[in-house]
Length: 123
Image 1 (cartoon, one colour):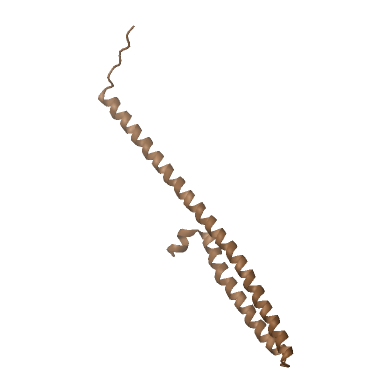
Image 2 (cartoon, rainbow, N blue to C red):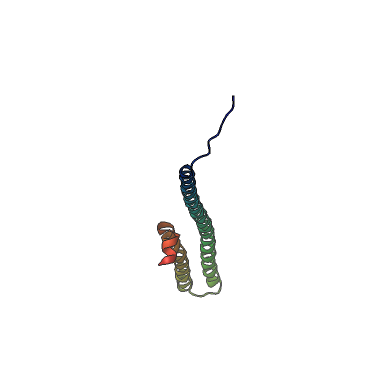
């Protein structure tokens, strides 16, 4: 028993090449989409890590500034200065600094996180 192979016709070869090319294009497109998703996920993960760092640093800054307000209050009592006025001014500046830092960092990152990276950078 012998097996004979027929040579495919030219039309069959063209159809096969076209199908291979179409499948290749589909796979390339799918890989590009997966890469885009991967980039987006890694960007959001990095953004979350940065936000975590900002939360910790903002907490430390707040504690340091509030401690400095307390120290100013204690020192003003030691120096027989009017503690209420000194402490009120220092506390006012402390709260304004904490608020400014909070809004500067968090509004930017909330906008980026809600609208996405492309929209933020494009406009």
